[in-house]
Length: 309
Image (cartoon, rainbow, N blue to C red):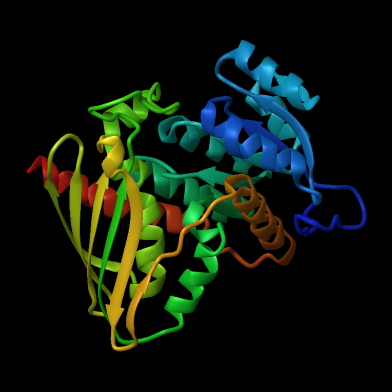
């Protein structure tokens, strides 16, 4: 297995790690495929998808091999990038890890703690590296902002919101509206991982969580953290278009600090691939890996169970 490190702007000496992409939907087309193709430190090896015609089209766009069998892709690749629904991703990730492939996972890793822990266990058992692509942890300037706030102390509270208009009550649904798993699981599972991925490194692990439903698929989380701080997160994919947006505000002894805006999702994905290759080269697990992804799934599952009660 080639575990050479890379950066997006400088290729390493020797053969490049080969990256295979699983998935062909809008997210794969917007973020995964262009970022992998542009990455100087790896080689885009090929595409597999559940719809062969879509896989052939995406592979043809980038001049790479189309695979009819995911296991054949695993055999040819050093890294597997996932752009699949979580409950499809999880079992394939276990198979990819068993084949010795490093995993660039999407969020959520799975929608049950058992499946998510199985993925994390496979990563540990087979000695492969893993990274979960949590946009705010790799985009700039948000990634740097999170590190800066995590170095501060004295946080008292935080309020986050991620209100998407994927299924708006007004206007045209987004390109992601045809996703069955998003329709079934809603904002809690689709954008909840993003909010938690920022709150946890700054305020500490979640020690208590409760959840309340609002209009449409709105879910409000009330969280207590290991630091003693309290936070809230309001999540939805069904916001009116004029109300959609993302924000996070921290308050503490050092004042009020707000999450900056970000852009360039393919660039963020390239940095996630950098982080994965670095973890593969050094053998040091990335803190945004499958273990963290499993913890996010546990928190979201606990919140969901509270809503059902």
